[in-house]
Image 1 (cartoon, rainbow, N blue to C red):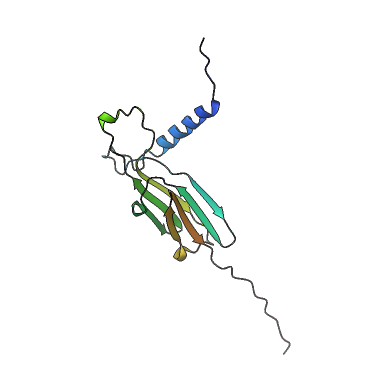
Image 2: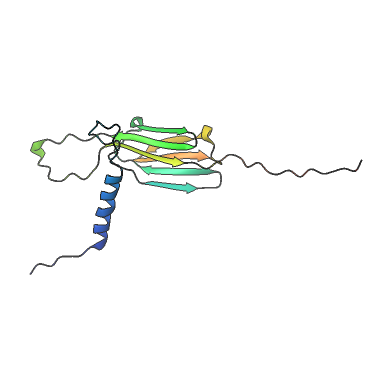
Length: 146
């Protein structure tokens, strides 16, 4: 009798992965067979006192292959991870790491300073720093008697 371990979270992870793959399978134009995005990097966004910090997991993606742009309050992070050449002699049986294009878009709040956004990539993590605009404080004006 064989004993099989039941791991319910592994099934959920597979479902989540398949949903992401299907949700990003949009084509650039109607004639293309190539999807616009092949994979979606995981992203964390943290609001700190004077800035927003976006961290994206992009292992294996060169910094030159990543594009960060800002237009009309929307931050776009896109790029491409090149597929490794696998020879038939290597005997590969399973390939799970995605390659190809990716793109994520984020709507920034009005407090974001679009002119001072910086981005750096190190150890497979892209960090985009979005400074906040200084708050304009209400000023009390005293009224003098004439």
